[in-house]
Image (cartoon, rainbow, N blue to C red; front, side):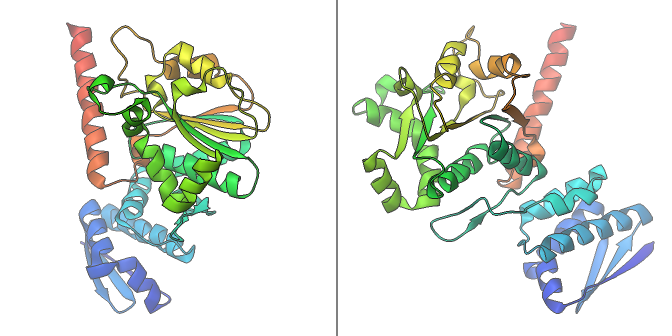
Length: 325
């Protein structure tokens, strides 16, 4: 057995690093099969040489985040562990960074993974960005945060959020009410993100003035959208024709962010996804960038990551069996 002692500069550092009831220490212990003994502002890591080395590097990475003013959560502890396992712990200092937006409750929104950071930088420096990846990677939430910041800074006059109203197993006709109330359930995640950033009252005020619009994709036809930050969510459910229609709505001084998960296409059989096609078509066009998220970028509950991983594995096996058959 091998031992390594890590001494911390200050007791406050130890409190942040260990976490409530030493929960961060327990996560590292389980991840690397080591024992960690904490005493005051000192910790002793016990285990096999390589495991102790990895656990030590994980704690060093977490200390970098603490010194940057980041609060440790289960998500970023697990993310640092994944970077150590890949041999990329030198990239820990790239996590977090500048605040993207302040929510209505005063909470700062920051990128939590390298994929999210790349995505935020792409949106800031390009006119059109495609964010593609699994659920829980913050594609829509970060795009809304950047839209609200651009709106508050008067860089744009309007925020337009849209989604194709495609049924995922349900039928629109069976939902009660007029067309708007039928499509509202599809737009709910966009409303939720805006409520979070602006507060319900402020959102309602801006919506009544027409400076914030949440509408199904069909409402975009025939319009030219100048001075706007436009987000198309769930874009995997657009047809190629709808995608072309949407992208050609862009006017002067506008920014477009298109988000989607190409593993969750709800279009009828035989219909091509506009998102899958457009990424290939616009691959080499300047001022357009595609950011691809992986399950490592999932910032929801750990189980979401496990579920996505299990589905990916299942699909791989299924494809292999189909090829054999």
